[in-house]
Image (cartoon, rainbow, N blue to C red; front, side, top):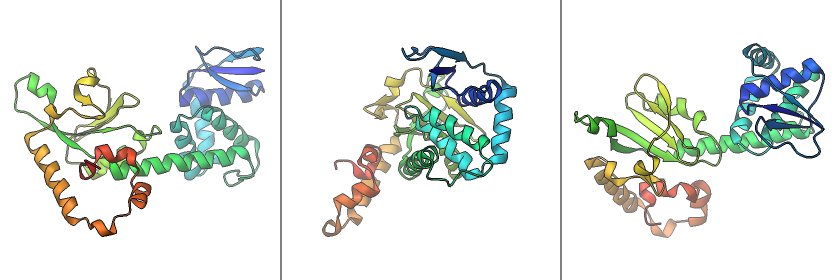
Length: 267
């Protein structure tokens, strides 16, 4: 068996495709550089990350695939599912080997797998767009400098798939005039929008700001608790108990998002 070892980045994966065609060798598995080599592997190839290689593969893909298919590959990569990188690798190799478009050839197991995984990640993306809720917090840095406090809209999420990068433009357009941050608690990273650009962030003291998957109450602004209480009462006042359908509600609004929704507190 032949194994390709790469740096587990998407650019590195495209370099692996480049090496496979250049050396006319197809790997039986893909491994990280520091990953333990399985016993059945008799030969390994170290994939070197180079801009010239992955840019050439990316340019060829842009010519061969539609925008939808390119997005599907991106979604599969962000799924972080085991061996999803090898599915992408085989898919790309088939794209280059085939004289015809393979995007809708669902008789091919890799094409079908890419389609199905991309659909699941896309559904998670829509869930984030629907159920992300922001809490208004005081900027901790401003408090340390004893300046006038600044408000930031902060949200904590923990999606099944790494779907945060897929919703950034949505929230940037929707809240273009507000400073906000969305933090993926599961993957320990987030993005901060400063009215100009998006910046990737990580929290130095994660446990200080986030407690039980929610923003620490001591960082909320004075008005935030009041607004949440008002929204909760408004939601209850509009609800008609006789028409409640818990099963349908859980289907349309997965319960794993409820702890972020003020209207669902206590349910």
